[in-house]
Every structure is written in structure tokens, then in C-alpha cells.
Image 1 (cartoon, rainbow, N blue to C red):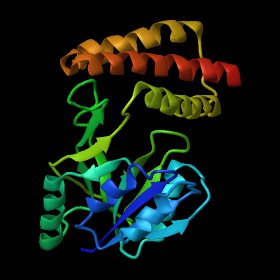
Image 2 (image 1 turned 30 degrees about the vertical axis):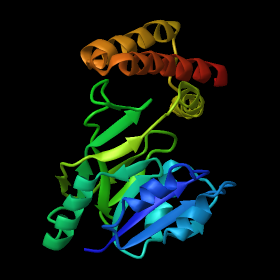
Image 3 (image 1 turned 180 degrees about the vertical axis):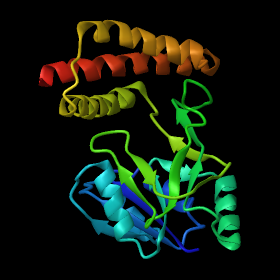
Length: 245
């Protein structure tokens, strides 16, 4: 079982070293860059990654392109702001020695937000398929929230994939602006009708669900912030979709 780790990048010099250095269990590291103007490509190459350039065509398309150009059939797909925990790396080493019993594997993803590990808010365990045989799975999703669709058996790893999200509220707002635009474009493409009641009631429900039902209050001030930002995300995607229609 030989594994190629794939990472898609655009101006990720802050994150790329941490991600690559966590991938000692992989036989190849492939970085697909879509035009970085910082030191991302230089740092990745110095750390032993194979770097290829490809214009941006969307998250799922970019990740499938990376899998197609890998030297191995088993793909471990990470975002640049993610890294394997030591225990997850150990699980993958064990899996390689024993051989795979499934066509793809999920792993829980643990996110760090404003310096705090978030255990509630609907953010954990947030299982994702990230390790898969490329003949049995591919990325799907035209706009945002892409995921791996598996045509086969799915197993589960137990150790955490670490996700280093926003270090500041300014960074979160900048990211939210980009993602709400993509989410709005998806709504428009599906010709979904956005009613005024959606813009009033859905953000309020999103806050209530995140902070109370998903126990965001147990994540302190960061949990409260996540709940408010989730409500704002819901409002903005609807407002942008109405503006695009």
C-alpha cells in the first residue's frame, strides 16, 4: 500500500511546512499550486514535495486533478491548513503494514479556532473521507463544501486530522466573504427561491442550533463567536443569492 499525499495550494506559505512535515507516512507528496505569489512553491519543493502548476478550476476539480497525477493509487488528500496528528500518522503506518480492508477511510477532524481546539458547535468529530483508492472514489461538488464520493466499502480511522482554521476574526470574515459567494452561486445555479422569511428565521435558527443544541457554549467565547459567525454566514449567502438573481 503506497500512498501519495495531495495538497492543493494558493499562497499557503504560512501553513504548507506544517502540513508536509506531518506526512512522513506517505510515499509521495504532491502539491498542485494554482498561482501562488508567495513562497509556497519554494517551501514545498525544499521539503521534498513534487510541485505541479494548474490553473484554478474549483475545489473538487483541483483535487481530482491532483489524484490523477499522483504516482500511487492510494490518495491521502489534505488541505494546506491541515496536518496529521502523530496518532493518526501512526494509524496510517499500521494500515500500510497490514494492508487495506476497505476502499476508503474516514477520519475525525479536530479544528483549532482563535487558538482553541473546538469540541462542540457541530465541528467535531466532523468525519471526512480523506484516504481513498482513486479507482473507487472521487471528489464531487461544483462550488463549496466538496466531498469524496466512494463507490465501495468505507472504513474508519480513529485518530484526529488537525485543522488549523482562523487565527483572527479578520481572517474569518475574509474567508467567509469568499465562501458565502460560492454558496450563493450554488443556490442560484439550483434556482432556489430565497424568501424574506429565510433571511430572518434561518440565521436565528443557525445560532440557536450551534450555541445551544450543539453545545457551543461549552467552547467558551470561541463557541459564542462561532455561533454568531455561522448565523452571519447563513444570512450573507441568502443576501448574495438574492442580489445575484
